[in-house]
Image 1 (cartoon, rainbow, N blue to C red):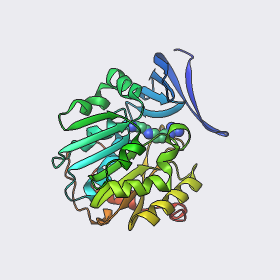
Image 2 (cartoon, rainbow, N blue to C red; image 1 turned 30 degrees about the vertical axis):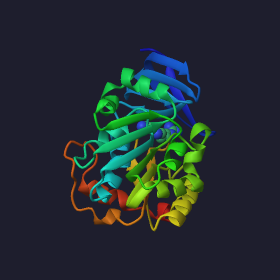
Image 3 (cartoon, rainbow, N blue to C red; image 1 turned 45 degrees about the horizontal axis):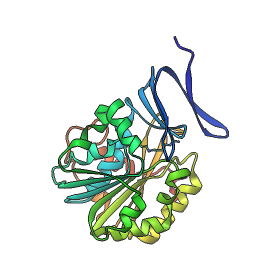
Amino acid sequence: QSNLWFTELQNDNLSIGLRVEKTLHSEVTPYQTLDVYETHQYGRLLVLDGCVMTTDKDEFVYHEMLSHVPMHTHPNPKNVLVVGGGDGGIIREVIKHPSVERAVLAEIDGAVVEASKKYFPQIAAGLCDARVDVQIVDGIKYVEDHPDTFDVILIDSTDPIGPAVGLFSKNFYESVYAALKSDGLMAAQTESPFANQELIRRVNQDIGKTFPITQLYLAHIPTYPTGMWSFTMGSKVHRPQDVTESRVKNTRYYNAQVHHAALALPEFVKELV
Ligand code: AG3
């Protein structure tokens, strides 16, 4: 047994530890530090700036829930934009929808895309699909430059510190609104209801001021801080409550019942919205 442990200091008082079998990769990119570890418990682990981004064993929960809840809420999503998400997990789920004609990935750090292709082939698999357009660009600028273009925009960001701060701002949600077609909708990962209450409250207010329909929803992600994770959807017309069945069959977490269950909020979470 190696005695090497990866520890994410989730805040001043909380951490998660995973025993490391092997360090596979470490680099400092122009934007962040990037590490890949082989772990015993969760398989391969991708880390940016010391934070768990994804692991082989639990990535399906996050990637399916950030994509399929909004993708099913839209009746016919053809043009989809993913902001961040350089590992490709969200894109892989998006292109499971037969209606999708074009999926753009706007990732600021090309090193994340390269590392994912090399160390997480199952997660990155969709990046080579003919419908997918990988752009190594600033997502904020990309969104500003493409008004009235997308049916669905998914924001797969890191935590609201460092390179991702701008992806949690009201200005950004307003440009996302403008980049969506007249019945478009968006969803973003919005951290843990146990650890990030102020952020969730603020983001729900800002998205609520920008979009007529706002919906917080939840999933259980074992390797993220506290394990309880939130996502926030903003929609111009379509309601997540109106989904009746799943259009994708090859999922491991998402189905129509899970879709509706994810919209049910515990009392202490309701207070945040
Ligand atoms: N997006 C990062 C979610 C935030 C995790 N935060 C943390 N570990 N402190 C993940 C990208 C996966 N495509």
